[in-house]
Length: 79
Image 1 (cartoon, rainbow, N blue to C red):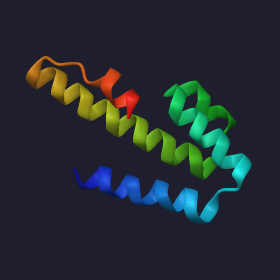
Image 2 (cartoon, rainbow, N blue to C red):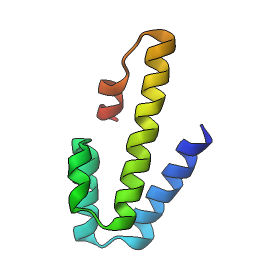
Image 3 (cartoon, one colour):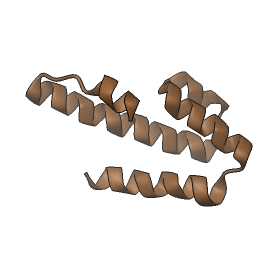
């Protein structure tokens, strides 16, 4: 769970400190699409953030699917 809090803080910093409006629009679009191929258009530090969030979320979803038999990926995409 700590990894999620760290990612939230890092992504908040990306929006508040590092990204320009144009860069953040690309980042937001990649997150909205939740498509690994969407990260190709991102800056390196945004690729790292996107991939960390993507992998962590999918790992959590995998663990829940394995333990509870419930696929939460569609619900995660809505949030």
